[in-house]
Amino acid sequence: IPEEQDNQHRDRSARFDADIDMNLKDGNYDRVQSMLKEALKRDRSNGLRLEQLYRLLMARNDVAELSRNHPRLLGWLADTNNGDGMVALLECLLKAEPGFRLDDPELSVRCARILYLRGHYRLTLRLLQDFHKRFPDSDQLAPAYVLMAQALANGLQQWDKARAFLTFVHQRCKGHPLQQQAEVFLQQVANREPLKGPRAEFSVADNT
Image 1 (cartoon, one colour):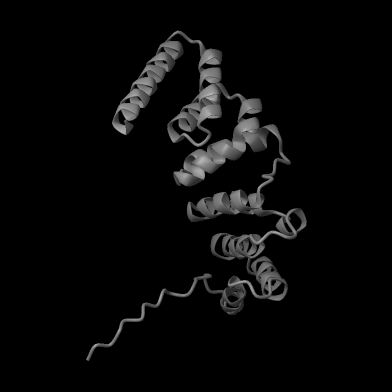
Image 2 (spheres, one colour):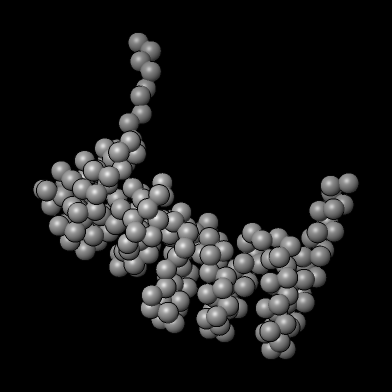
């Protein structure tokens, strides 16, 4: 019976949370950490458990575990649009390992887009650096470099660098939907205008 299973699941979840609270109060952080990791083995994308793990690891400044779990923690932060949490985690990882890079092209672009929209332009550039060398065959190359151009032009007023990335997209990403977008942006860069995408046009059926 689905409803009965739901109730059992809720009971288990409530017991688990009570157990975690008790262990946290007693200072058994290692125990809490292993409980959360076990729970995430059973349910990899459980947002509540990922949040609890993130908070615990950040509070403990456990760089090794943050580094080990960073792909799913960043995925969760991207899913919840948590730009501040993302900045805190990335800064922690970069401090421990200045050459830190993400291995996943799609996750890199998702995170970079959130950082860009929050005004963290240098961190945006850091995530997308050397994208064409690291992920030469990725379908995320055009989105990555258009985003870099926006961060450079709109965020840092570095028009010439922005032009270089847009030219790359225009010349090398043939057939990609963003190729035309790059052309529009190149014109805006030439005029030192903020890079703005096309306004959405809604065609309204004319009933007269």
